[in-house]
Each structure stands twice: as C-alpha cells, then as structure tokens.
Image (cartoon, rainbow, N blue to C red; front, top):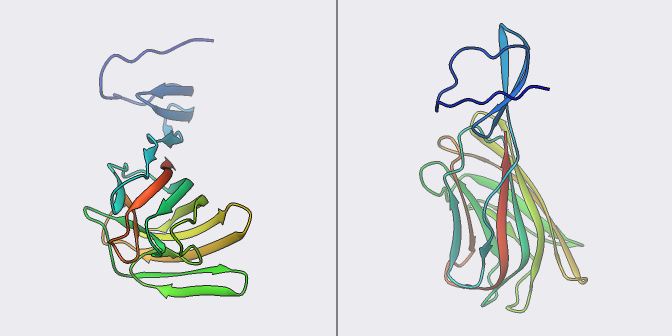
Length: 191
C-alpha cells in the first residue's frame, strides 16, 4: 500500500487509478480520465442550548446534500414550539410547507419553518433528529422524529425551496422570544 502526500492547497491534474484523500476530501477514480469527489461526513461542534432565542450553524459548504440536526434534552423557557429554519446567505422565514404529528394531535401546515408541535411546556425536553435532503437545485425535503423522554413521540416532515445554495441552519422558537434553557444541539452534514 502506498501513501500519497500532497503539499499544495490545490489538486492539480487527475489522480491515477485508485483512491486518494486530499484536504479532507476523498477522490475515487476508476481511470486516469475520470475522477469522482466524495465528501466525508462532517460533525460540527455541539452547542449548549442553555441560553438565547436562537442557535445558528453557518458556513455549511456548498457541496452538502444532506444535513442532520440532533437534539439532546433541548428545552425552552416557555410554551412556544421549536422551529427549524434553513437559509442561503440569510435565514429564510417563508416558503415552508411542513406538518408535525403526535398520535392523533398535529399541527400545520407551517410556512415560516419546520415547527415541532406537541412539546409546549417549559419542562419538555426534546430528544431526536431532523434530516434535510437536497432533492434537486435548492429544494430541500425534511423528515424528523423526536421524543420527550418516554411520554410523547413527534414526527415531522416538509419541504422548502431556498433562494440560493444552503449555507446555514437555525433553531429557534415559533414566538421568537422564549429562550433555550437546557440541552445540546449539533449538526452533521455530508455530500
């Protein structure tokens, strides 16, 4: 087995047959004439959701095709549901079509973000994830599942057409004034 070390910031030319990793990017090749760039899964740094009215993750690379947001014990100071929003240059607050459901109780359609229903008391802790998939162009579909310990399970789904290439994510509350007071949130993304 050989190891190829690249010493510049730019990959020049087409790599030989085989696989190489360069600057965190994995290239798989099947001939000298073709090269396919495959992106690894990247996990951001977890953020404590213990203050503020929103938590943002910015600088999401343009090559991302799937973004997953994970919550561990996230709680708010009041009764407002949690809202997830995507953005291109700025957070987009229109154009969403989403619903959420728990048993026979649901909410939607929401148009300002992907809203999580049924967790509406200050003591509710949210555990789970929502995944956003690029279906084509700047169109993203979402599917998520969250629990409140052992008592409530919420599913949610929807779609949004962004005004440009995804580069940010925001978690906030529907009323925009309740603050987060417990838990952690993190994202992973992949090409």
